[in-house]
Length: 129
Image (tube, rainbow, N blue to C red; front, side, top):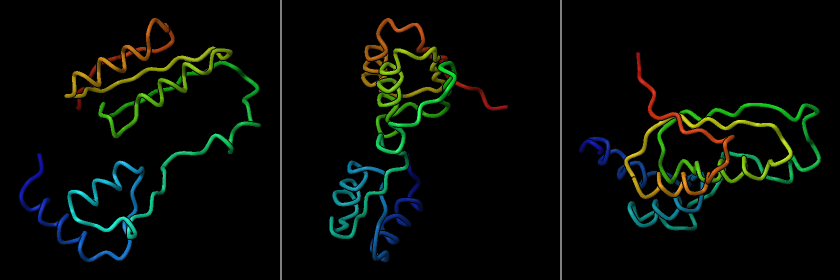
């Protein structure tokens, strides 16, 4: 949960900016509904790469490991990572997901999406040292 100072700062800054950048449409919509930012003032700039950039560029080695470490929540789009890993059927890959999430429904959806694919592993939380 946000502290009062953080919430105030977000509201204040949302009114001062000419343009707002969001990593996806959902965050852009939140800027509108939570902070009253006009949709015309929101630009969506995804923090990933498009399929078009990589469709003709396949690695020579069809083996590898992918590691996700972070909070498990819908806006992190871990479901998209799982879907992408499942599409790589001709690759000997392993997807390891380390992190915890408080949304048990979303956690269940992720496990259901992974299905019986033994290449996808949920490792649980990571302890800070």
